[in-house]
Length: 86
Figure 1 (spheres, rainbow, N blue to C red):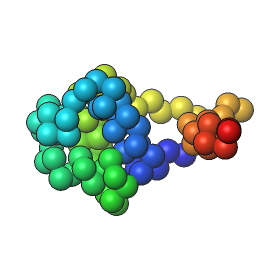
Figure 2: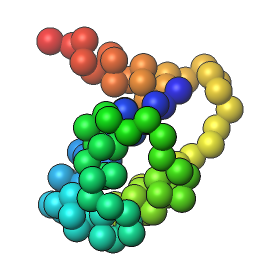
Figure 3: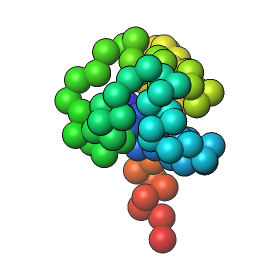
Figure 4: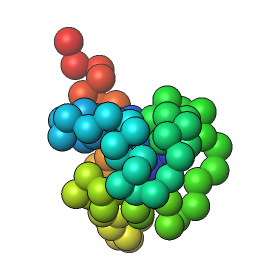
């Protein structure tokens, strides 16, 4: 299951890859820069679906709902595997 901290890290990576500042992405997503900063740095404990949807859409991403554990690794599994490799 994807948690908010991991989602924030992914958003930060995609924002940086698109060469957007936090201020630019926040403006495009119609949220406060401090909200985006808290999300990207793992300090956000709650964030509404509308805000997350606007952030993702602003960097060309979407959330996808699938059945849990369909025999495929989760994003968390893949990230953990990547982090364990030398």
